[in-house]
Structures are given as structure tokens and as C-alpha cells.
Length: 95
Image 1 (tube, one colour):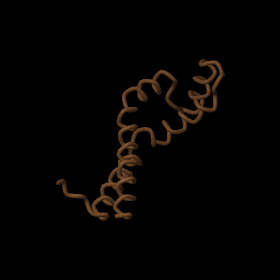
Image 2: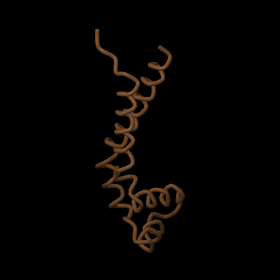
Image 3: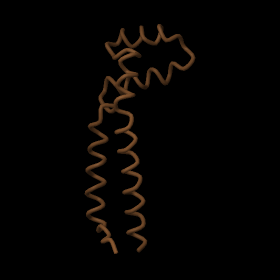
């Protein structure tokens, strides 16, 4: 029978995951702002969006797309790990 982690151990793991999320590439100010601008620009011409990004000194759509492709899996995995740990902590409190 596998040993269950204590609430304290789960809390430490959760804090480690949250720290990794806060230091992830997608949390960097330039990338986060670029992603917000792109999300707000739905339906606009790609060249116009690229011009807005360039005028603010932010990564363009092509560079942003490469970064998203390269780092999306780790972003997803960190958030999945956080959800799993939160569920395990909630279950540990009930037990």
C-alpha cells in the first residue's frame, strides 16, 4: 500500500510548483503583455498586431508563436500538477 504524503509535504510540493509557474517564460512581463495584446486583437490583421507589438518593443507574432510551441507543454504540465496537488490536499483534509 503506497504511503500518503502528509498535508505539510503536499503544501511544500504545491509551493514548489507555484514557484515554477511564477518563473515560467509565459510569466515574463514582455511575453505576458504580448499574449494579452494578441488575445485582445482577435479579428485584427496580423500585420497590424505585429506593428503594435513592435512599437512596444515586444516579441512579434512569429517569435511569440515559436515560444508558445516550445514552452506550452511545460506550462500545461505545471498547471496540471498544481490541480492534482490541490485535489490531494483537499482529500487529505477530509480524511
